[in-house]
Image (cartoon, rainbow, N blue to C red):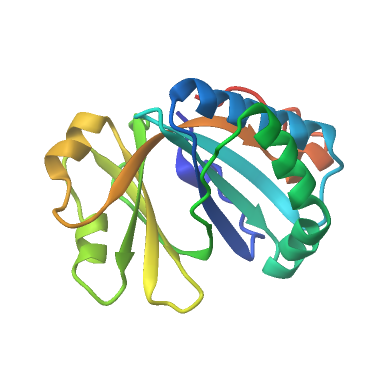
Length: 206
């Protein structure tokens, strides 16, 4: 799978992370593919640089990772278009639970291994002032890199970690730190599409 830093857009002023709980792998894939179709058909919103969608390895949901130039640009789009987009998804996949959107910024990346490929992404939320954050990014067998995203109040961190495989993460999992494992399903890179780069199109990214 693609390494996380290859997904990062330096011009992004905000990284939006949101989870959809669908209940089954089939419903997750249908929701992800339908959203990809919405992105492809719609005009590129001002300020959106990239959207990436991940499928949970347990089949219960998906994760969206969106990069925008600013929160203001995203909010302007959301006020005008989000309700219609979500309504069309819910018609095909009713009953999706959406716990909420986290507005974050990528604060730092701790890279331990640049050579091996990613087998699984692990996303966890930890308090900044506790021991959990440093333990989450510390070297461990199979941990390739950890990317720390801070919430606006600076009190919580959402860590996107790259692991060689689920077994390595399972062996090193930290007690008391919740997590969910994902694989990258789709990449929709607006800045590349606007520049004519053929890589900036939707399609399986796994």
